[in-house]
Image (cartoon, rainbow, N blue to C red; front, top):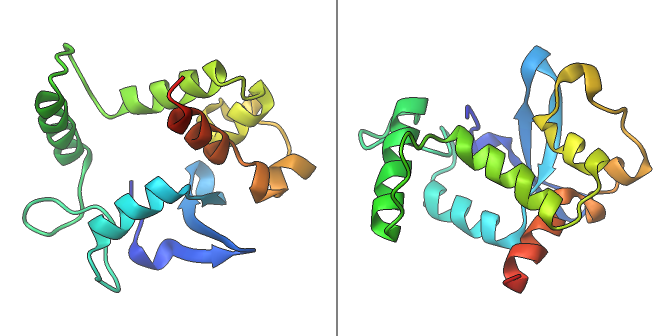
Length: 143
């Protein structure tokens, strides 16, 4: 993730992160409250630079992210062989499907092959109905 603090902003009453995807495509992703709080802790009052940093204060790369994930899993008593950050993306999508998020909305979460990604529709442009909020509500409900 190459997100910088400068990529955080307010848009139509939502706290969003500007994400640059493959091919330079830019998407605004709304941040549910729990994610906002986690990002605020990571940013720790800094005004610029990477959101996620390694122990030396530089930008976190995939290797540092994997190490961090292993430490978090150990602290939580989770022991999975070959754990890596991409597993979180897989869990994100499968949990969205378990929460009955429409498959079109899951594609809108940018985990689809570019050939199958649907065009923006009215629901996609409406940040109030973004799948991040649906997933956050589902996870908070404890089901």
